[in-house]
Image (cartoon, rainbow over all chains, first blue to last red):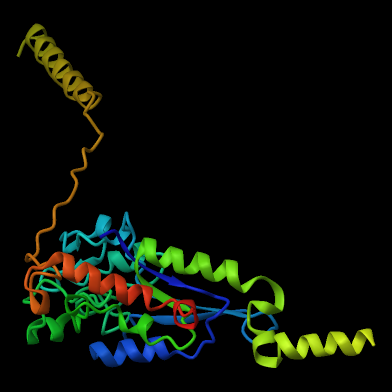
Length: 208
Length: 78
């Protein structure tokens, strides 16, 4: 097994926030914390793009590097996890992360008052007994141990967000890019408003 | 106190002050040696160890791979 990765296809993301909702519901994430967020660039302008962002489970994770209590670890599958019992809520990881993944339940509060850091676990739980109540309470559900992928990706209606082994994810995306072409084909104009037969018909009419 | 004794004392004091002053000029190594942190939290079971797969790594990998491939909708329309 290689490395677990997320990939968000900006051409497909429709900013439905289904991934955000699914994540919050699956893990009962506390108020004030969004393990996953949808970011929209040029909102309202033609050509706007949305992308779903969470912990990217970096190969060389800056949160791991700056943690003064060394509460982070990386699993064999490349998932970055942390031990909440060791976290002191200093917020260094929050400052170090370029994606804003580490968040604190009490928001921007003084040192020691922010609470334990919470972030995306790639639905892999944490350092508690697998699928135990303690694990669910601290880290959320452990879908990976059930042979399932993160719920945000699995329920994505347009399959903009895909997750899994980096090789598999990259192959899916490569095939998608090759098959969908460019321009209006990318977002399915022909599929929605008649590609094959209608297009031919229009062509014939134009020719006649 | 004779002038000679006073001179000796002041010389000794001056020498002491010079030594003290020079000691501040000594070279102290200022390069920190950072050590790679080691995870200090609780150990975590690997995903195939606990739960449904009971240590069968190959079965877990197969299940996950199939699941990942299922995300490719082109597989469904072929």
